[in-house]
Length: 132
Ligand code: HEC
Image (cartoon, rainbow, N blue to C red; front, side):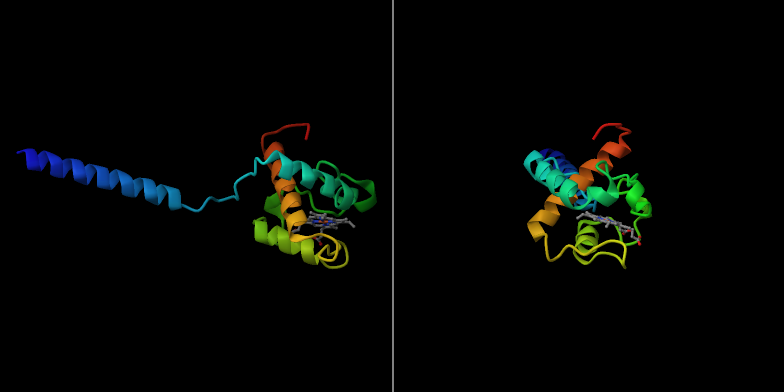
């Protein structure tokens, strides 16, 4: 009798554990939004210096001078993808004649900071925030 109860417990615990492991392994649809404030504020400075002239300070590209720059808060419209690797690639190599390549002036760590800031912009826009 006691053995059967133990066996049931072992099976239950085993099942729950594997469910937890399976759940944890599920790949998130969107890269997690970074919360490291130092990283994000470093990214904000770089973004203002290198990107905001075309993409606008809030990423929405409502800049008269550069009407066709991508709205960075609408990743669903990106033609080259919104994963960290995609963004890094876009920033390093640019796009055609309209978006300049930055690999000569930004380090990989700079680019990671900028991506963290873009994630913040996207999260704020998704949450409907007016201020960034
Ligand atoms: C000289 C203006 C200009 C600057 C500066 C600029 N961009 Fe762009 N960017 C563009 C334009 C224009 C597009 C749209 C290109 C296209 O789709 O042909 C674009 C597109 C993008 C896209 C979307 C790519 C896709 O997959 O559709 C991302 C992301 C992006 N830029 C990020 C950045 C970041 C980050 C910086 C700063 C490091 C930056 N841009 C600086 C003009 C600029």
